[in-house]
Length: 204
Length: 204
DNA sequence: GATATTTGCAACCATTTAGTTCAAAACTCC
DNA sequence: GGAGTTTTGAACTAAATGGTTGCAAATATC
Image (cartoon, each protein chain N blue to C red):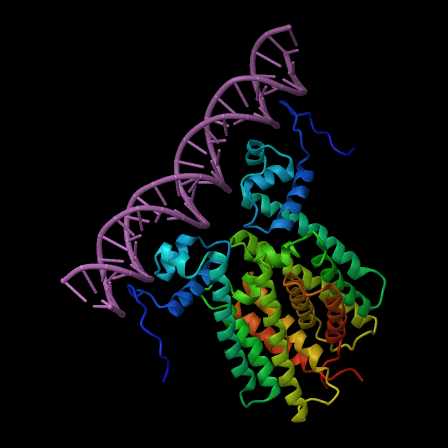
C-alpha cells in the first residue's frame, strides 16, 4: 500500500509540489539567490502567486526547501559515486571531477547551490543546514578513506579525517574557480592532481 | 615634487575620492553585492547621490573600483607575508592563516570580496579581473615554491605550479567554510594541516 | 568684486518588487 | 443538485529602488 490519503476537499491543485520545487531549483540555479524575484519563481514554478505564498511561504522558505532537495539529490549522487566499486584514487578523483563537471555545466550561471550561492545567503537556518551538509560530506569522504585503509590502499596512519576536509576544501576551490570562468578542461586536470595530492602518504 | 595639479576651477569637493572608495569597500564588505543599494553607498561613502553618479558612475562601476583597490591592498599584504624571511612552511601556513583570519574578522559578514562575493557578480569585466587576480596570486605562490627549491627546502622535482594552484584552492575552501560559520579556531588548525599537505614531497 | 565653473542638497519620477485581497472556479460530501 | 471547502487568477497596495533635475552654495579666475 503506497498511501491511503483521503482526497482533499476543495479544488485540486494544478501543480505538483515536488515538481514545483524542482523547477524552483532551476530558477535559483540560473539566477543566484538575490537575483531571483517572486515573479521569477511564479513564472518558473508554474504556480500562481497566492498559491505560492500559501503553499510554500516566501522566497527564503522556498530556497530552504530547494536547498534541501538539492542537497539530498547531490548527496545521493556523491555517495553512489564514492561507494562504487573502484580504487580509492578513482573514487576521490571521481568526486572532484563530478564537482567540476556540475559546476561547469552550461546553463547554470551559478556552479553549485551548496558551495557558491547558499553560503552568501545571510540566514541562520541556511547556515546551519550548510554546516550539516558540509560535515556530512566530509564524513562520507572520511569513511571512504577508512575503507581504503582497510583495503590496504593507503597506510594505516593515513590522516583520514584531515584529508577528508581537505578534499572538500579543494572541491570548493575548484567550484569557485569554475565560477570565475576557469575552463572545464583546466579544472578537470586540476581535480586529477588534487586527488593525487590528498592521497600522498603522511610525511615520515 | 609630488604633483603639479592646477587647482580645479569650481567648488572643491567635500570628499576624498580614495577615502570614499575605502568606505564603499566597507559597505560591500558588510552587505555583499546585491545587498547594497545606492542609498547604502550614499550613506556609507559620505557622498551625495548626484555626486556619486557624476564622479563614480553606477553601482557596478563603484564595485569595480572597490575590487581593484581591495585586490591591490590584499595582494600587497599577501606578497609581503609570502616574501618575508621565514621558512617555506611558515610562508605557506602564514598565507593560509591570513586568509582565515581576514575571512573570520568580525563585522565582515562576507569573508572576502575576491573569493566570496565578487565571483557571484555576473559581469564580464569583474570575471576577467578575478581571473587575473587569481593567476597573479598563484604565480606569487609558485615563485615562493621555486625559492624554496633553490633554498633546498623542498626537492627539485617539486611540482611548484600545481601546488601553487592547490594552495589557492585550499584557501578558497577555507574562506568559504568561514562563510558558513565554521569557527576560526577550527579553520586555523585546518590551515596548518593544509600547509603541511601541500609541502609533501611528490610520490616516489 | 563680478563671473564662470563645479559641487551639494533636496525633491522628484518611473519602475520594480513583495505581499494581500477578492471573486470566480473546481472539487468533495451530503 | 446544493452546500461547504480549497485553489486560482487578476488586480491592488505600499514600499523600495535607480537614476535625474533644478537650484543654491562655494570657490577660482579675471
